[in-house]
Image (cartoon, rainbow, N blue to C red; front, side, top):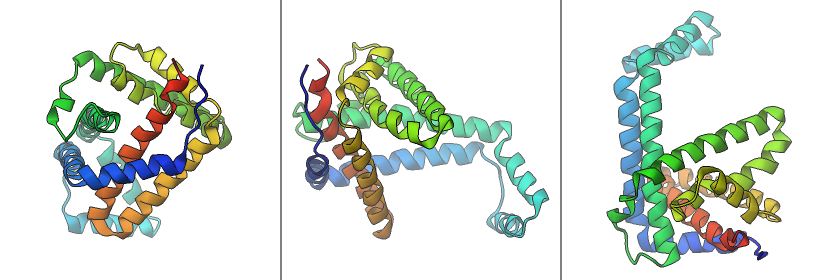
Length: 235
């Protein structure tokens, strides 16, 4: 089995280069996904005008427990919960196509942005969704055990969803096993990459909304670049 190491600077450098080439179009796609998700959540969410929200916020800031309970009731109602779940589901499914696009561009199988990247078998979407849920559950259990185990587990599973997209024939547990295998010996580099992503996000927010979406594009391509650096560790 190969033993490739992750280059954090190399992954971020690749992310930056591809963001410069395709950043505008991909940022618009991310913006559309965000608007669609937020729109669905708002559609099923609680109906309150801005003045009422402000008054409730002021009461909660003053320690008004009744206001806190009212706020909690609004956002745990059936309609609001359904909106959050539906929005999250759509967000996950649309990101399958987005990741497939990034995999194609960085991997050289695509020359330009194409919505054909979203034309994947239904089974890939289903497996991606299941893998994402399983990874979240495992990460949550690790976090409950203590913060330290989380940092040992989460980075090792980060590529499982990408593996399913890049290998449509792979099974759910194979993807998780593959991510664990390809990241062996690269834990510290992956943690470093995660902190680098946080820094990119912060810089993006400092550059206003447009910068935040461009930062998301850089991270998207950098994550895919990191995956390609390590994928041959699992063969």
